[in-house]
Image 1: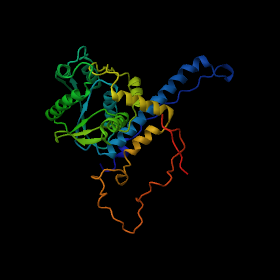
Image 2 (image 1 turned 90 degrees about the vertical axis):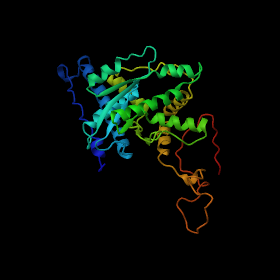
Image 3 (image 1 turned 45 degrees about the vertical axis):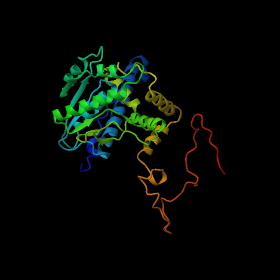
Image 4 (image 1 turned 45 degrees about the horizontal axis):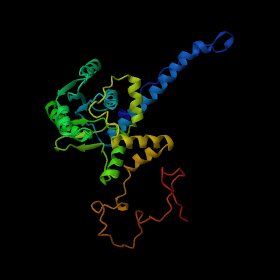
Length: 330
């Protein structure tokens, strides 16, 4: 991308300063100044949030070369806060990106009871965004095949994925953009560790199951709390998922709550976990397919990547994990 980082992450103009309104004798009048001051604070906070979102999405696009010259990007719209935020930020970046690409918003109407099918078309038309609504009754299939009380997400996502791949072909899209954010990626990592016995997460960019599409996650660096704040600021017409949204005991929700609790109690922990996904040391894990443990032999040459397992780690002092007792060995 010929070093497009600057163009992708250009900042929006700073909102203008509002003048103070002094009272007689040069003393500020709280009643008249309070409203403009409060409004200015809200504007500044929203501006900072917009800059952060654009910077983080732009950086992810550049780091993983998600969008290239001439791409037609299919933005998958569920009606949730994250997909609205994804489309909104991509539209902002498109206006100032150093390359040309097109966006088309796609919603899969799964015929859930009570689904407000007018909301997304009206919103997208008002935004001037090209869009396509695909109608497929996957709801009936899921309800027929999944016993009552069991989680529906796995089958629902497989059905949805196959339909979206087909639609991408029909629309001539070269990339499929999903609204998964940083918290989704970390939740998937922990779910696979706790219940799947794998060190596996959601990659920011991958080739689709059928090998014919490139799937991207431009919100990979974005915290969920920021998409929630942006959705509230922009007043997106959120559509809840009635198919699975009522399943309060989903393991993913429990893991998400744990991450949010950590983020409150231990600032920086969630960021460090995410950074760890970008700093893998295969020689210090146990996967023989990633590192040739069997073929290791002494070379007599010092190595920076040698065994430092018994060295004291230079970690900052911090409270331990909940329920975990840390024993210091001298």
